[in-house]
Image (cartoon, rainbow, N blue to C red; front, top):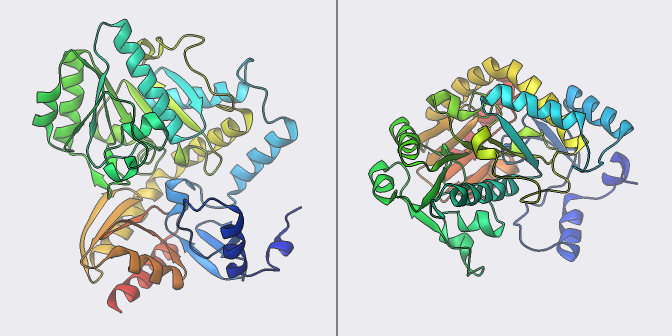
Length: 396
């Protein structure tokens, strides 16, 4: 049995060497192994404290060891974890009710991850198109990221992720982000849906303009295609609203969620209008672990807690944005809420590594762009300390 004490008997270097011997080499892992966390801080096996400003890549919405989330998971584990979607699940129903209330959409399908949510949305779009006499083509953005399963990968607008996995599923048209005219020109009766991120996270934290996003929605309404938003990274309070599309006054047909929805417990979801959701009848799609009791118990707590702290998220966002803009070698700060991209005059990866050496965790998402996505419970003092460390690294 793993215990805190047994983990700390070894060094970070020891775990890095063990990982090389037994794990796939598909990740570039930093040589740091953690034992526990509290709030926006993590502690490694050697006892060092780190400020976590990447939040498990926008997953740890309530930070680490949040008391309400710990209680909910523990209580659920004491009762039952999984019985499958062959039966009624009260926890799943409560989570779905919360999501429909928050979103204004009608139906929810649960899965385990963002890529699974996008796979389900793509299948829904194709099925909807068949039943409404439209073609199967889906318009997607260049520089986008929707996941690594074959369908979601085929919808991802970054050729580097495609290399070596061809042939990918066909039927996706890639168009420049924030250039509405190109999308209008590509639209036609052969288009089943449009799928975009309201903020391109892996693409360097690039926000969609109001004109672009509203234009896409209007275009889809006129043509009868589905307007689908990938809010896997932007959803559940990350950008200062429960869902980012609320800040733009949009009402999509389909929204995909994951990451922060479970606060660290794997859970994904597809939200849809009733008319769109109706095409997935029994036998058309499913997910064995999707919406199990543990995941939905976690999601219920996360949704409740995040709604209460949104005003604080906005305060911390303003503090962080203002501080970042004042740092040396910062060209631009993009994003919303606590999902921020920092465009640098210098390469980002050396800055990421230097910050880690000084016990600040963040992510070089592009060659000159840092991504910051701290837990939504980050404090004023946490932000001050992170800015101090980053400023020292950039000045050095």
